[in-house]
Amino acid sequence: MADIEPYENALDAIPGAHPYPRTSRYHAAEIGIHTQPVGTEVRYTKRRLLPPLDRTGGDETQPHTVGAGERPDLLAQRYFGDPAQWWQIADANPVLDPHELTDEAGRVVDIPLAGGFPGGRGDRRV
Image 1 (cartoon, rainbow, N blue to C red):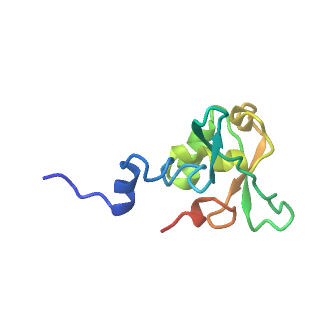
Image 2: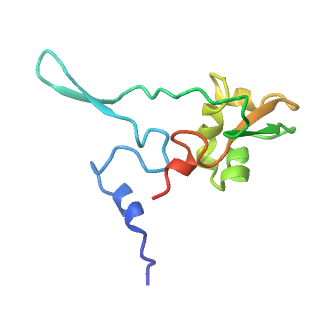
């Protein structure tokens, strides 16, 4: 007999229920509609702006010194229990390419704490 999935997981499988799964960085992003001159509507995800992290208080992040061979997905697995949440670490650090987070052993990166980063794991619990 198949296991019954939680209601939230079932929503992810319904086309059109919402465009991104609950664990996506874009789940709460606003969807815009652009109407082309010929009347065709094009849906798009509006830009996701992040408030700056408070780097002085230490209440929103914890430091992590990158070791040889570490990757953003491995850090996400270690700290959040889900490698797909690497984007939370990328959002908490001033990098353009997520690979910059771990390309140099010894670099110190900020790891967001649950509930301390808007749109992070602590804000997504239902």
